[in-house]
Amino acid sequence: MGRRFKKNKLVTAFVKVTGLPCLLILKPKFYYKTDKSPRRLPKPSILVSNHWSLIDMPLYWYHYLFHDLRFLVAEVMFNKNAFMNFLLFSVGCIYVDRDKYDFSFIGDALDCLDRGESIGIFPSSRLPVNGVHFPFKPSVAIIALHTDAPVVPVYTDGNYGFFKRAHVMVGDPVDVKDLCPDSSLPENQRARLITAELEKIVNGLGDELKKRMNKGK
Image (cartoon, helix red, strand yellow):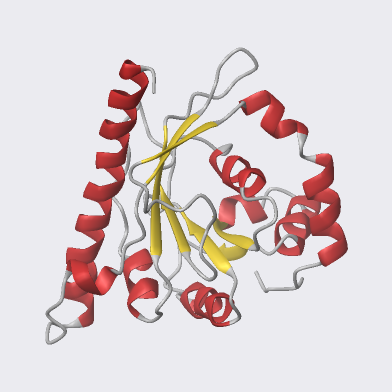
C-alpha cells in the first residue's frame, strides 16, 4: 500500500461540513481535569486517547473542527475499498500497517508535527474485546520523544448512539521527557516506561470522568 494521495483541502472541507450532524448525534460533553487542560489543542500537539469504537476518530475530528488534526489509522480501514482508501488519505490520515515491520508512519507523523499540524493516536491500536482494552503500544512515546510537541491525554466513555451522550475528559498537556527524565536509557526502554505512564494517565482520566459524572458536574 503506497501513500497515493496527499491531503486534499477541498475534500477535507466537504467532509467537515457534511459531517457536522455527527456532533448532533453524539452530543459530546467535554470535561477538563484542571484549568490547564486545553480547550483547544496546542499547535502542534499529539492527542492520545483510549479506543472504544471507530466513532472515536470522528468524535475528536469534529469537536476540534477548525484544528488541523491528522489521525494514525490502521491498514484495515484503508483496505476496505478504493473509496475509503481515497477518503482517508484525502483528509490527511496517516497509514499504519500493523502486520508489517514498517515504521514509516513515525516519520510521517513527525513530518506533520514539524509543519505545525497535530496528530491523533489510539495507542491500543485495536478495538477492545469483550470490553477489555489492549495495552498501549510504544509508538506514541517514540514519536513524542522526537518532537517538542506536547501530548494531550484524552479519555472517552464511548457512549455513542442516537439516545445516548458521549462524555470526554481532557487532561493537562504532558511533556513525555518528564515521564522518564533519564535520557541515558536506550530509547526502546525509555519508550516502554513512558508508554506505561501515558496509559496510566489516560485511564486515570477515565476514573476522573466517572467522578465528575456522578457529581453531575
